[in-house]
Amino acid sequence: MKGKILVTGGTGYIGSHTVVELQNAEYEVVVIDNLSNSNIGVLDGIERITGIRPAFKQIDVCDKEALEQLFQEYPGIKGIINFAASKAVGESVKEPLKYYRNNLVSVINLLELMPKYNIEGFVFSSSCTVYGQPDAEYLPVTESAPRKKALSPYGNTKTICEDIICDTIHSGAPFKSIILRYFNPIGAHPTAEIGELPNGVPQNLLPFVTQTAIGIREKLSVFGDDYNTPDGSCIRDYINVVDLAKAHVIAVDRMISGKSLDNVEIFNLGTGRGLSVLELIRTFEKVTGVKLNYQIVGRREGDIEKVWANPEKANNVLGWTAKETVEDTLMSAWRWQLKLRERGLC
Ligand code: UD1
Image 1 (tube, helix red, strand yellow):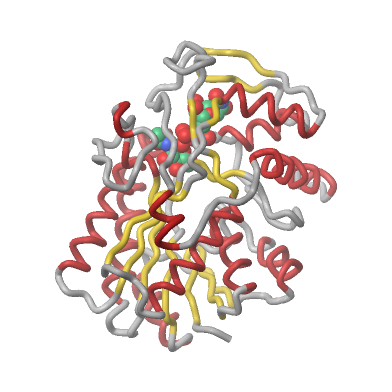
Image 2: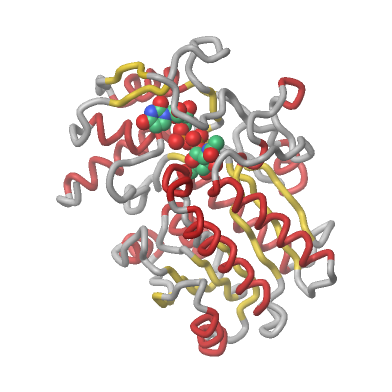
């Protein structure tokens, strides 16, 4: 066994896939989650894939006393991967304080407690949202592109958390951090044992696509076809969730084995390829053989026209690349949706 890693938000979408990859890499994993947007059954899926059920506590990362108890109960944690956060852009506009509290207090609590428990590394889930709409000269976007004013409280929490981490490290905190800026994570584990399980009506594109394909939603709305892109729909960099999860294992290895070049490092995690909404729909139809009922509607407020990553820093420094094709990734999401139906969960 390698070291012990705490994964906050470990029953969530990206968290659960990361727990699987950590366990595959022989890390011992402790999961905490307040189950506000996930369910305990995810642990069964993780166990079916890896043969190991991670330790689990239902804890809210904003509850500092509960965190203290956890660190005492599980001594020797070497690193933390922090996924626990609220992530719905629209909700954040309506309930900004919920977002500022959840997403900021949790990070502050963890950073405050790390020195006392000799925790060596902190991986933070950030987002390409910090770049806003990059100017043309910055596309594909590198880590040194300027951050722009966030368009939502959710996006702002990512920018502020990055600053909190950098300021803490620069003040001489005795640990390292790696900030990972995700582009658009999609797909599910190839076993279809875990995947994305949004509560209520999905806000993100792919869960809406798969729910429409299976008949839960009548039709998919494509938000705008009058953007300045080849087919008029928005362009994103869709990254396979298992590829994304693997980058977290590399980040943890790097920090706790003393390979970090800087006490805080930032990496884009994307494929380097931009795909439009309409291209994604067509590819989904092609690989699954399912016709999607969709209609073009007006633009969604706050949407970015086009953004995709330059992932060379992660490729060269971390030795990480996105390997899965978008076809296989879309198919994995579809298989997951079919599995949910088979289990009567949708
Ligand atoms: C947003 C956030 C991102 C965050 C992610 C997770 C911004 C700019 N981006 O990504 O930081 O990490 O959510 O929640 O804040 N679309 C449709 N129909 C739909 C749904 C989406 O056409 O029903 C289109 C959107 O207009 C967009 C693309 O699909 O062009 C992707 O949308 P979505 O999956 O919501 O992700 P982002 O908005 O890119």
